[in-house]
Length: 140
Image (cartoon, rainbow, N blue to C red; front, side, top):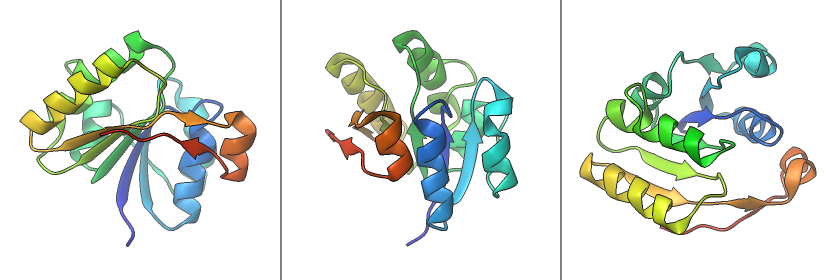
């Protein structure tokens, strides 16, 4: 089943992961603070969203791969963030390495808004992301 996936964070690993989703035939919307990092994915058919909230409002699944806890906080809980704009039903998957407490906070907020969240940090680095061989540790 193909999904409408939102992907936030197109750095070293995220750009590969979003690319694999595109190659598998999913509709992929992207957001990253540095828009030029999205160029290759946009040329391959991804759609650009101007804010994390705009992306969340259009996606069935939202995946985040963001650098720092402060950035994760802003992307999820900011005024233009995922939780401010998401409609009921989406599944949120944070693959950023973060704390268990933060994952619980995201999950509680998602549940309050009619969604669900998973904490899914990855292991394997850029090479694993490029070759689609990452190990994903999922909790939810």
